[in-house]
Image (cartoon, rainbow, N blue to C red; front, side, top):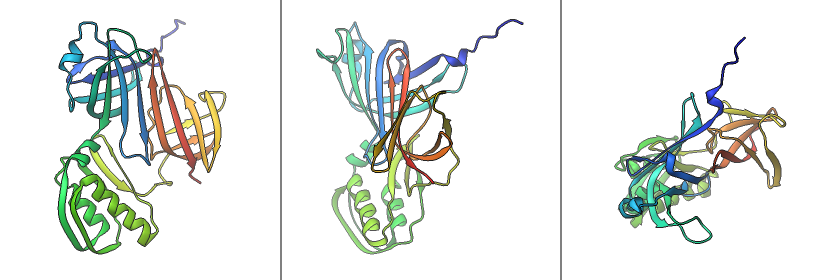
Length: 262
């Protein structure tokens, strides 16, 4: 029997910067996504011997990163904009490379300001009204807490959303979180009952597994399409992902911080 190669076992990346495919030029990247953070961030190092990218890439240019395995479907792990391009400095990279810092579409929330007062509206209704004209899709979980009056004077959308979330936490004792993924704004509670997206097993695909305390654990594995707010299985136990880091340098690693999902 002739052995059949498995091209999907080779990790691959797809990086689009300012509309240009730059995966062959990408030396390394790191994408960090934290449920308790205010934005996904990215650090990308790209070969730029002719200084073309340094001269043409601008703040606000689109940046998209996908990864997976050859022969299989690639998963988007970052979509956002350039926050700052800069030549690599000593101790960071080498000559002929440019370092690009990226941030997800939370830039929209930080750049827009609101001057409005809400009265007799549910918390979820306020969130929908605040984000209606952002150009983002909306996935807002229902929250029936009624807000009698909420004046928002010259605040950013980011600050206004945080104000509503804090109000719900204080008055209803419920924790809501927001994040942007795939061009969709999500405002929701943790969903421990969703189906697991991945299963990891010690001795098979777990490189490192640690218990960190405060109910958190950590594992490192190979290139894996996992996002925060998803459920995974670790040695048969259901776990809720609160933070991920996707790292690439001649191959990929996924780092996952998680808590017990019951």
